[in-house]
Length: 78
Image 1 (cartoon, rainbow, N blue to C red):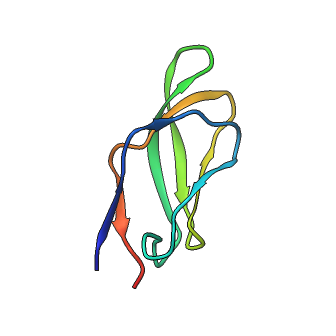
Image 2: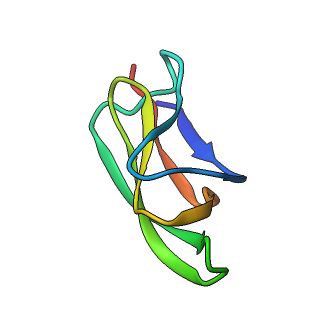
């Protein structure tokens, strides 16, 4: 199996799907990760990033301006 690694940062809203992974780059099981984030007030915090089997990637936290994806990795579906 291949490993998929997410990296970089993005601007998000509350609980929204921020992007979709194409087939072949999706996990076989739903995955939950802790991720560093910057709030709209300029404070660093921790949030949750979810990668679903349908390829959607979502962040669950309100009041964020930036989420850091570095360190999120999983085995791709076959």
